[in-house]
Length: 184
Image (cartoon, rainbow, N blue to C red; front, side, top):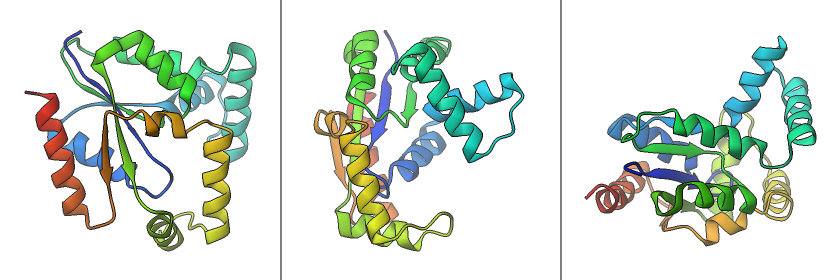
């Protein structure tokens, strides 16, 4: 395979979205977003986009097709992208999804973990303009994502880790260093 499949992982508030947006803008890499599987299915079913319908569709797809349905559909989308185009993966969470991607893409599949301390993430998430979270909500979400989604596995097995405790410029600089090793 001539392309790199780069999943960006991390706990809420670590800077995943900022990293993805920066990579898309600077390097023009397309992204395959797990959430699009839900939105695509909602459109097929003629459902309004809202939290209730999103949850229903997510649960329904997994009940009908298994826990790996999202990974399988995202893999299918990636395979339809031009062969030599590097692709970003957003919202890969679970260990099983990680293993499915590794099985499908082998050494072309790379993981970039963005790490920020709980205190830094709490500050970011409590002050964000949309859907701010309290300290208790952040902790509860962390525990749920680690225990229920098995999110720690992909973070622990990441090929690259950036500690994101500073400004956006520092994060971008670290991302550029990693990309330079990937596209040599």
